[in-house]
Image (cartoon, rainbow, N blue to C red):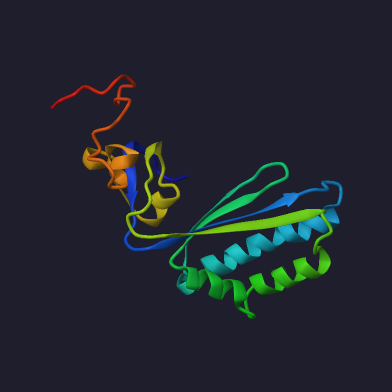
Length: 176
């Protein structure tokens, strides 16, 4: 287990990056033969990506619900994400083709994804008493203080002095 950082920190990432969300939804739980191959394709892809540091995948984390597993991935660029998706020698393209051939629009299992292009400095994150997570794993964690005290400050929209709640849970004290 990752070491917990026992303070309030934020993430700093150099340069632009991509956030990619991908998931599936099991619509017919009893049709295991339809959704299990789709579910099992992702671990193969993740192993392939993790084995290739040049793939462009920076970090990936999975969450599992009864019907809807979801992956959140951070990529160096859209170009690297797309190159992986279309690589005829990789795990993804054959799985994509197999899904379209075997499942198509039958309704038993669904897949989805969303892609977000994030420009440097146009994101914010905060972690309190957490191990490095998400952007905290991709970039560097630094104290969430001064201008980084608030979401507005981390986004460069305020001086970071607009916190509605102090560190002790009460109203912040005006030290001005």
